[in-house]
Amino acid sequence: MTSSSGRRIYGVDFSGARDAGRKVWIAGGYVADDELVVEDCRSAADRFGTTDRTAVFEELRGFVRERSDCLFGFDFPFGLPRTVVDGDEWTTVIDGFADRFADPAHLRETCTEDGDGHRLRATDALAGAMCPYNIRIQYQTYYGVSAVLHPLVTDHGIPVSPMTNPEADPRGLVEVYPAATLARYGLHRDGYKEATGRATTRRTRNLEGLVERADLRTADSLRETVAADDEGDALDSIVAACATFRAAREGPLSMEDLSAPEGFDGTDEAYREAVGVEGHIYG
Image 1 (cartoon, rainbow, N blue to C red):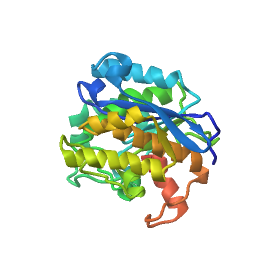
Image 2: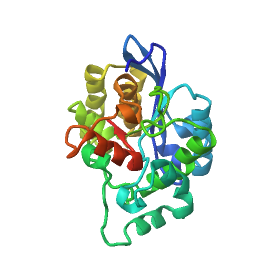
Image 3: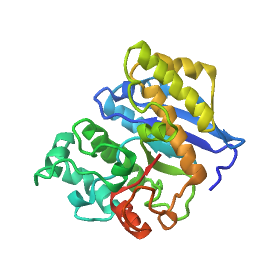
């Protein structure tokens, strides 16, 4: 699949924290000469003027709705392992998510009540990602699915690749995982989220590496933004945009075109069956 010139791409570093506006970052750009030109990278607090979680999610939903012809990559889990949702289809899981789980802690407790602990989706295992209800990301999963993903899909018909995108159109939403994208390009997937000189060097090197290896261009001012952000959220939003750009350019964005990635122990059909319940990470 080829990205058309001028197509808008966004990467969203997501957070379910109470002060989500400080932690959610959005990087935006456009495709030109088969490169992603990221021209803007800001926190939700700067973009929307609030840090409050509920207000930020409302603004974020509106931001996506107003750009329905763009492709957005969000870095929270779009689903749960098949073993905890009884094999229901992805849309059924998303539709019943908020009714089944009262809050992030209830999500974790419910999914671990049978004693089997933290299970991975097929796509998590391939990307090196954590379980969606791990205590470290349970807030991302809960609020990402219930407050952002479900309303956009159910109330506004925003397509999600590959589960609800039969036309393979490069618009709507995809799940991304910045650590996996950094690893794909041989860059530092950890050690860059600290207020240390070593971490600053890693953030800078990661951005330079993406420019060298991922067909990325950025303004010089964004390099300063990435270096100065000790928590790594600015960088993660740009990495998310790079993963989203790759998804738009190479796909596959529909289920019928999806094949089993390298490392999956099974057939293409078996992987599609897993994704049809659990979701798929674009790295």
